[in-house]
Amino acid sequence: MSKLIGTGTCSGKIKLSQDDIKNFIYQLFSSYPDIDTMINVFNNSEITQRYISVPVGWFGTKHTFSERNKIYREEALSLSINAIKDCLNNSGMNPGDIDCIIFVSSTGISTPTIDAMIFNELKLNNHIKRIPLWGLGCAGGAAGVSRAMEYVKANRKHNCLLVAAELCSLTFQKDDLSKSNIVASSLFSDGCAAAIIAGKESEYYNKKGIELLYSLSTIYNDSLDIMGWDIVDDGFRVLFSRDIPSIVRKYVKTNIMELLNQSELVLEDIKYLVTHPGGMKVINAYEESLKLEPGALKYSRQVLSGHGNMSAPSVLYVLKEFFENNEFQKDNYGILSSLGPGFSSELVLFKAS
Image (tube, rainbow, N blue to C red; front, side, top):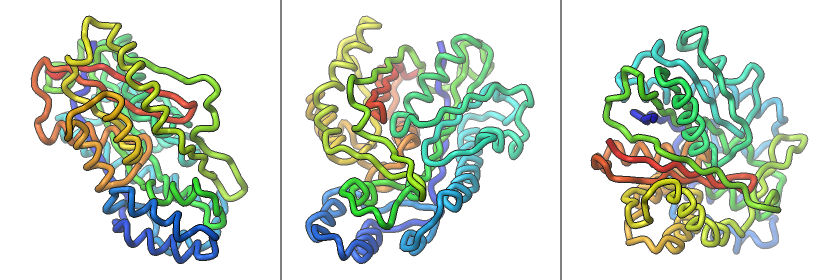
């Protein structure tokens, strides 16, 4: 058994309204032949504001991959430290209580990895286990929880720190006139989330939280081109298919039923759905597929509205909303769900305790 006992978050330092970004993109892409139609993706996003890590004017000039990556390393570390401190405070833990750190990211590269920098900043145990995970994209938050759950099941006295940090805004390409680039500019933002997962024999296991019961990882056949990055001279070029909502409708319920088959539960037993807010069409597809009551995914909608899509950290932002609003009632069941490149699904079944 393992238990997630606390979360923490930190968003990019610059807050912008959706209209601010929309106006900037409209002016930047004024020569795009279909810009008057494409700009409507901003109006339909239901996002009101987002947080980024550089001034909006930065995106109007060309930048090399090395320039982008230098900012990524600096800002990912800063966001991570603040999110971890928030998480430790919410969990009542100290840095020295951490036995393993899983660091999830897909929007920059670093060797040594960012978790090594976190180790030096926070003076963590020098025998700490480090597990950097790269390339999971929007699935990274739920995948990180799943891998942390498995780690502490094998190391029952240990506490695992999960950190998911993404600077999606840095991947924007000013000369990319593709629909994917414009859609991505209407959605993506910067943020970091952290979570503590305690093993069954950890001194912190009895704290209030959610017991992590089972997980299910799924990768779909012949779907590599649905989402991801093309690596170009200036950095990352987004790949973003319009088929994502239809994939949600086709597969998510089936995957959830596969997960529930590992227990004696049925879909009606699930009281909480903590889903990655990939976009309003994706949230709507979850609701349609699972025939949910209105408001069932209200926290996913709130995070999307107030933060946009931060990729991997987003689902942990949604989880934090559940904690802070005291939604979890003892012994009720829930599912944590994210989708990402591969194209893949990550699910975790949990019980409030």
